[in-house]
Length: 335
Image (cartoon, rainbow, N blue to C red; front, side, top):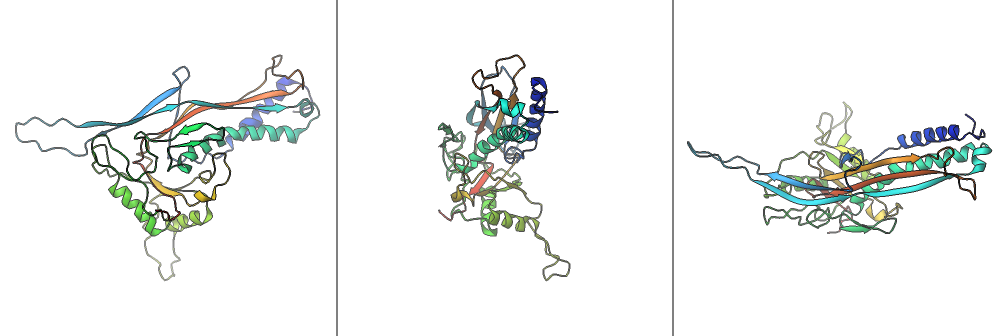
């Protein structure tokens, strides 16, 4: 299909194929990590969703002969409202690109446009961990984004609140050591002793994800712990690796970034463990990133420049209700 055939229908068809192929080739690190529940939101159902946690007591009570069974205790936890926001960009394809067969330029514009939607979702999800010790941040467009949990604290806190008791729990490692055997065991101790329901009772839940940034030292250390093996004739052959298959390693390359997506080396050592079963991180997709192509005979052609605009649009919301499902260390050795 030649781009210098000034047939809008052919050009638009080709553009849509290029854009979609590029979109589908992008790896969605955070979205596919298991750290968030991602769900489609139907049209015409409003622009907000409320999420809350509800806990029942962990154990049964003794019942004497002839006595009534005790009623289960149910406690609603804190709530958090997800609000949709929309993102947008126009891709301009010039008359010269279309009519002079400037194929590389056209492909570059459409390919970049196809990647931006998934990249933006991934950045927004990753920034829940980038700014995990804060209750809000100013994003790349100057908006103040509320990222507090339902108890109005940062996702990583030393004293998260519970609704059914005055007991608090922490999910940030004391000392914030970088990834090592000792710090990983420290997070596991938090998972053992600080994973509580709304009554303050200990919950025994599997923490199955070890997440890190893309810092090579941290990634390699994680791989050594999770995949370490020995040759049959090695001195320590036959020794069992207690971490083998214990966690799924999730690398989040956009966590160590600024609000605009630039490199932020101060966050390169961030890591943590999480429970995909217990996660209260939600991402609602009202509008999957999509391209709206100009229509033949429509008003998508600029009368001043003869450019065609391909509109890229998307809409989603993100919320995290509580911090009980995640344990975190900033890896900077700052208490």
